[in-house]
Picture 1 (cartoon, helix red, strand yellow):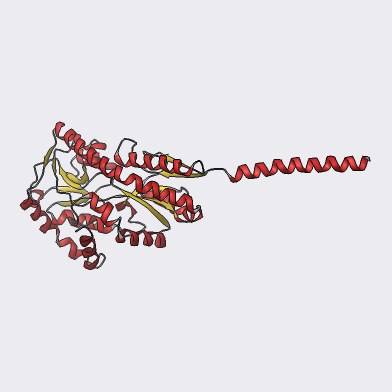
Picture 2: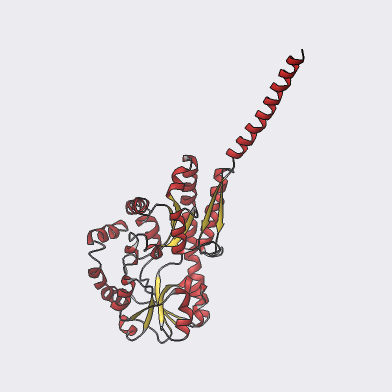
Length: 338
């Protein structure tokens, strides 16, 4: 009798403890997947607004299975360092300007070509949103180890600015030292347009312009405003040299481990928030232009005939890069926006 009672009690203990450990195991299995998204955008600029909307939508669609953390304003890691961290698996997601991905891949270099396209929407929706973009995405996966999730504007076209005089035509740039990144292509564009390309690190640009180390730079209205360069820049010629984008990506190994429903929700959130960023970025640029003009910055918009002179002057750059960016590929890009 005692032995029987002992066996009953033992069975109950096993059941209770077994149930307890099963529940713990089940709870641990249901822990949400944590995704850290690192980028430089402030929450109030179009890129930051899009990323927050994307994060919110992913979290909503995944219903607790995923928590995407928005590490904005460079609080975690940014640009080239963010891409490197994502490649190495130190973060799950990041967003980097296309030009700052050059250390890892040259597939976005064509976006630096002068006067290749006329507006940012075509770049996002027709070029990168079409067959060319899909090919680029596969190349980035294969060669870099990143899954490309979405493209965003972070400012519209790049303009040429200076502190000395109004520039209407390339000849007006003669003798002006124009800051560039240490990019041979960007330096070639400035040189072709009549300026003297002068590489300066972005962190030093305000001081460089203020002290006259350079007379101006190639940049977007957004960054002229954000970095307070409007305090030293006095003239802008709105030529829309090119349209660089921000690339948002995820570590490929991490992506491949995600359940298919979560992958689909992430891509769905990316697609849904694209119209928002295109609209807001364009609106914010117009607001910034008014703010800059109110601060005393002169913005000159070339006539169609003047713009044609800029395009012709810069066209020599295409010959310089034809061994890296084929004429056939450039034709495909142009045809995609017709």
